[in-house]
Length: 505
Image (cartoon, rainbow, N blue to C red; front, top):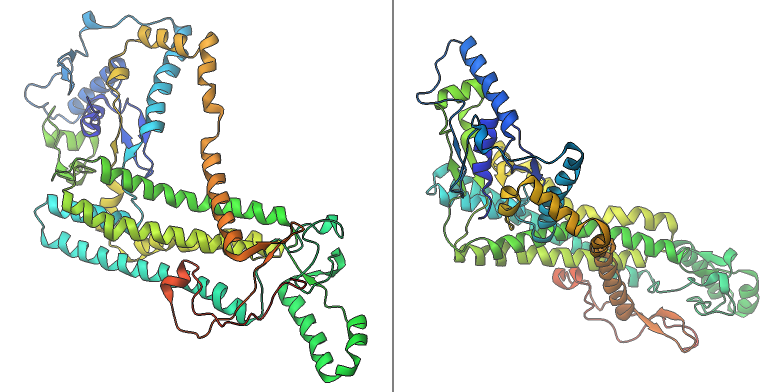
């Protein structure tokens, strides 16, 4: 039995809120479990008292002792019938019962997750709004909202793509025209110089801490030296002795790597949203199920429930993730998920490149988080441009779990206690030690290694002494706008002659 959240919400309304909540990856709370009979009985007596005070009759046939049918089970729980009450464990064992049920359910949530939609992004709205309009028979209002959200999604694609192409233009066009070579590992081993690798700078001299500068300062000092040599060429040797431009290199190699790791932490969160979208497209049924339903209470008259619980008609309209027809899955994959994934890849590639080319400590720390704002454009567009109707719908969509909790729901307290002692207590507890491995840390680290290695292979060369220096630099042959190449860091149409090569090579 797959647990149905909408049915759980009905039981939650009957029992007066005695259940517990789950929080799905999209951040929305979804009711899951039934309230305890004792608390439900108290709430029902309170309800009767309130109705009596207001002198309003109960719904016909309604009784606090009336059994509640639980969907997916042939059994019935009778709130007032103590003959079916289950034997409880001792009070001292109840914490272990609670831990047993919590660990079992939460591990299923961790392993299998939810089919969900990002509720605060144009990407999620572009997937959900057409399905809600389809479920409603394509009413005019929802058609208009679908057209609007597609327009906003297009704006988002253009904005994110343009910003990424500008970052690429800075790296692939403006840096070479400014005479800047790739930073690679220049100056990274300055503490071991002059004997160690990476001790020779781009000007061919040996590093020392007083001679280490950022590119802007170094290029200015180099320009002054070259200008004086051009004016007085006969005094070139004397000028070289008197005017020392220093060398360009990274101020702290480990700070740069730490900032790349922090940057990866930030962008992996957006990747999780893409993975959840992929899981949704793959796992939801490939059929035209309804994403919106109207669910008035069945355990009492609607008017009385609205009065007692202070509800309105909007509270009875439920939005939920459900089946998607095959052609809509294809459309969402091609026009939503694929561009979203490509933009993420382009940002991570450009962002890592930019951070690896940043020499200053403060600059690399600030840039590590500043670059992630590109991935937040979709949320800004959604929050600023969409209507309140769209925001309400997206904030109300209930995620669909990819796991079942029928075992935990039907499990007695003694069974839960026995399972806990068998799998979590004593020597068996060491089997759970595999959770000590920080898999998410390893995933982020693996992504960092992947993109950093890509940077080195694309822009640097290794010398015989082990130094990793910039490859020969060429300026672009023209300034033609090439957004796709620049977004993904692809160099095209370079002049043949290099304006810089590593001295001595």
